[in-house]
Length: 89
Image 1: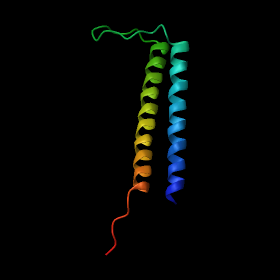
Image 2: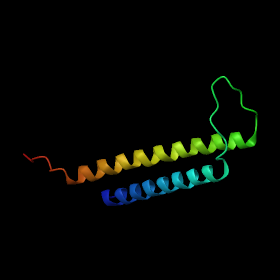
Image 3: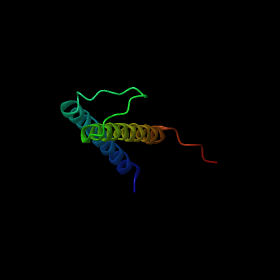
């Protein structure tokens, strides 16, 4: 596996993760916008809407984390590619 194919894969992973985060955020705001965060002392009424909003929020954070980590890997690969080679003795 060459370094350029790794870069292409990381670019695709980053783009897909960002797209997924944006799509999930739109879905959350479109269908669960009236669900507000609760205080710590309040017990939420068990509802599929609250559970769905919680699941969507978790998926949004996970996809943002994947996008951020793949972006860091992409920066490291590109930086390593353009670093000067160590001198050969």
